Length: 133
Image (cartoon, rainbow, N blue to C red):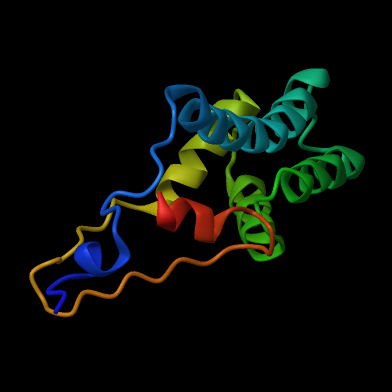
């Protein structure tokens, strides 16, 4: 009688991925994330930002939402930026506010058994594939 799944199913490791296939997955992931980054950075770099111009604030909001920042996070970022007296360099101010909103990285406690990790995201973005890797 079989004692393990490997014995029962035969090949314990299954088909091996080549380096090219692995690089392909991460390449696709990097490219997918790059689209959002490029959309946002091109908008930030395209023109000077005038804090007194309402149209510029609307363009910034659109760029953040198009860059997959999310509606709530975009509203909070714009509120924080508007509350600043002097924006200085918009990209730098935006990066500071994002870092402040995110806070310090949390620490995972993997000592508790069972450990549950919740992965969320938009449909079709590769959650299951990433978890399987």
